[in-house]
Length: 307
Ligand code: GLU
Image (cartoon, protein in one colour):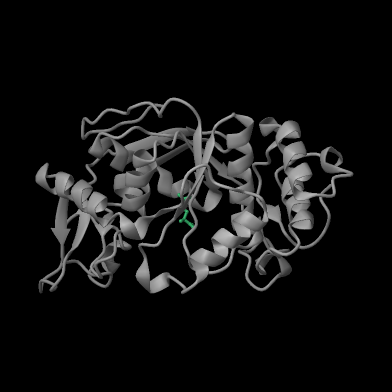
């Protein structure tokens, strides 16, 4: 990994030993796309002989759906994907996020900001300096992203990815003006706190990763390895909305979905042939899994079989 990092904070290597995780936000039931990340991260952790954890990312109150976290956990259990440690809830970890932001404020790496989205409209929503006139009752807190903060990393599946965080993203939010911790902050604090060595998740988060690496460096935390799995798209190549694959997965009948996900992960169907029970299928999957066969391209989840 190489990067230009004018803050002078250095990158630390990932934790020793494989520790992966699945970190759903409780905004609804698990769909095939989220199950692809769950099953993919589980397979990679099991293949490496490592641990696999589950974290409920419930810090975004306005987006949370009541009962969704419990339903997601029940679905994972029905699919036989059991975490190795008790489930971790971000809503119980405010003190850690507060401490991390406090440290950044104290070191001058973060600042209070009164700018609203409308204030920043003239600069495509990218914050480089404050433009707000009337102060807001509760300001946001942003990370100060120095000029020239380009971050590059080698993704385990997508290859090299680089982003000029200063120009493309700007000073990003750590604590929102509505009082919620930003995803970028909570995920970084928790991946480090849980000793995660390998983050495996959907490619929709590829362009969040440079922000997370910048934040790790600012906080003096290690940078895990990253692997971003392909996204499921509808038949037209758009984001899944009303198509079949946008329906929640059927927790009462996990085997067909697991077979489908297995193929979506580029693995040969034949490896799971003849398995009739869930434990048998999962055991066979772990034994037969070949990470080098993972697909990089987005997958059209239009019901047609895989080639
Ligand atoms: N909670 C995020 C989501 O459900 C995923 C976070 C992550 O895997 O880093 O989209």
